[in-house]
Length: 382
Ligand code: CAA
Image 1 (cartoon, helix red, strand yellow):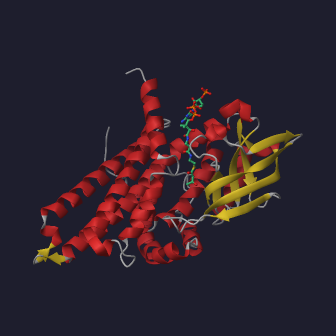
Image 2: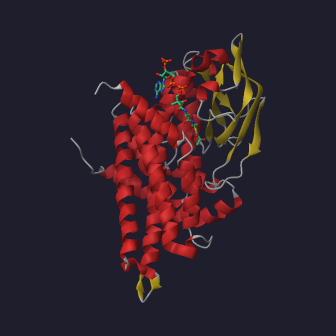
Image 3: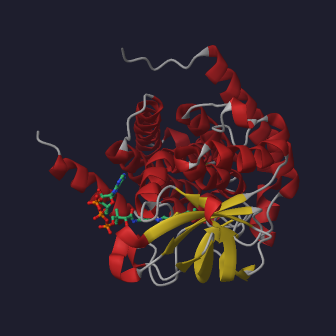
């Protein structure tokens, strides 16, 4: 049965996240956009309210919520500020490989850390030589007895350098391409792990993104996630599950831009009337509303499918790709509706436009999403 109705619990969660975003995130977003400092106090409060790490099952200290619930939260938090919501939701990305492939012992050891305290985690996959071509990574892992020694540099890592735990992807042998890749749980205080350059970004500036350097960092073999050579697939399965969340965040950014444009169009007068009365403005607003709704439906479908136990590979990619393209278009149009004011820092829409851009790039560029969708189409028999 198809239903577009959220349950009372989901509605309550969405309202909680919205209220939090309205009162705690939105007011401080411009400051963090300016300073590029993470909003530690908001992260602490989000944790206290139960808006972080929501997918961790109760037996490991979490709430065991589904992907749909995670997406409801992400839309609302990103409505307040994409960067602040990104610091919080990067934990979902980093903990997902542990949820998917961790042993009970690994889950018992590492997941309660995050449920008990407002700690940050990071997913260390991307490297400077290419974010899209994961199989070509250079970070290497060498097995020595009951341990692995990891060496390499990961780039553009959200929470990279400030995280208490990294899920790190490294190759045992580059000549094996994707079949040589392993995933490891690496605590942030492991000797040989250090923060590299902090990035200065166009948008998404309230999230800490930086390099993480591994210099002969030693982890016990017990920290390997899954079998040797399974790391690439684990990264792909993780991204399948987190891409709807990026779509949800993009919907949040787009929705906020539409609301700002609508409010401005009602107030701003030109030629003797509010500009909202002009059909060219109305057409832009109508396109915004239509596309935002379509994007949210794709996000909900992908998250729902995954909550039913399906991989949702193509659906997750569609949700991320469509929603982020919508966010870029809607925020650009919002700047246009606000005209000269829209281009100025005194109004919030230029930030939304800068923020929207990253949603077309991270967790796989939209070119990669289209490739993923096409490969799934070509694999299917219909
Ligand atoms: N689920 C399970 N298995 C999968 C899979 C999936 N979704 N996708 C691929 N595989 C399997 C394939 O079936 C294949 O298996 P076999 O060896 O058994 O045949 C294997 O993995 C290799 O697959 P491909 O041949 O498709 O691999 P490829 O090298 O051509 O790459 C790709 C595919 C889709 C381009 C992939 O590299 C990709 O997704 N790249 C983008 C990476 C990305 O999204 N990075 C974002 C980083 S995270 C980030 O941005 C976080 C942040 O800080 C905000």
